[in-house]
Amino acid sequence: MKTALEKYRKELESIKEAGTWKGERIITTPQRSRIDTTAAKQLESLETALSRSIAQCYSVEGMYPPSLKYLEEHYGLTYDRGKFLIDYQSVGANLMPEVTILSIQ
Image (cartoon, rainbow, N blue to C red; front, side, top):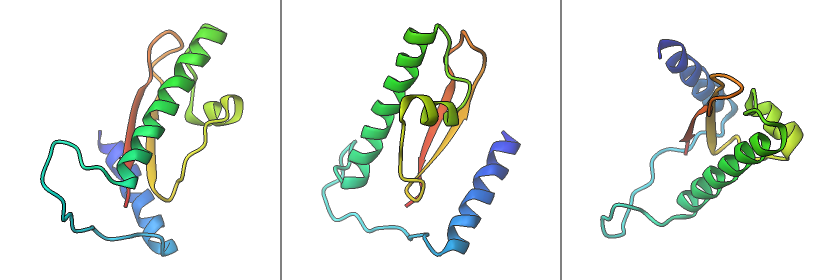
């Protein structure tokens, strides 16, 4: 857990240094369990694409992908690194990987 937090801190620092960090937005819509924004739709789309890529790799190759880079190179997964941070932890070839997607806007 400590190494994951350090990894996230370093990634966020590099984003801030690059000048692509954006602060919080004020939500002016009624409070609900889900906020419909473009960012929320993009996050949902990324979650779906990532889940499908992982499942496709397992069904085609008989193993879960060893890394996020593997999905990008072999299954065409793409996402906006300026908006999302993906923590991909491969537990083993026969176990579903642990995936966390963070919106960094």
